Image (cartoon, rainbow, N blue to C red; front, side, top):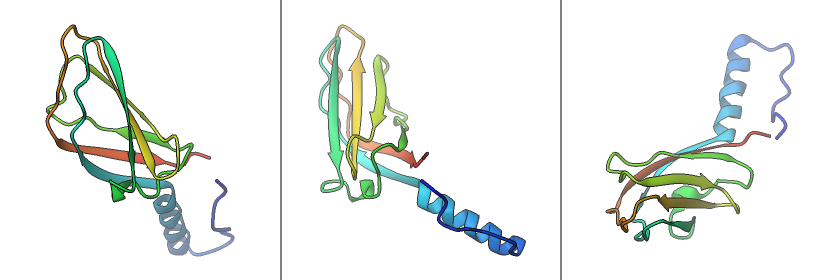
Length: 117
């Protein structure tokens, strides 16, 4: 993604304002309230969340680096991964490495997406 603003010899304050505007267009922070389905023993559950159900996901773009922070109540034995496979969606992958099914309660999941190119 090329820089939006072509900054030439401008004042430091104007350059700083352009810089912050640029960062705001490249970074997306928010939180969703989500109740994952039960993850069976020794298996992986992939869930696609969309902006239709979670308006906070509007603005996520294919190719964004995304970081989802698990809640404080995240269950031991689960491994978390996340990626953006389509615009305005977030795919969360939970892998259960235990011998028992894991069912988490509904809770808040903060996320951050960053446009890298």
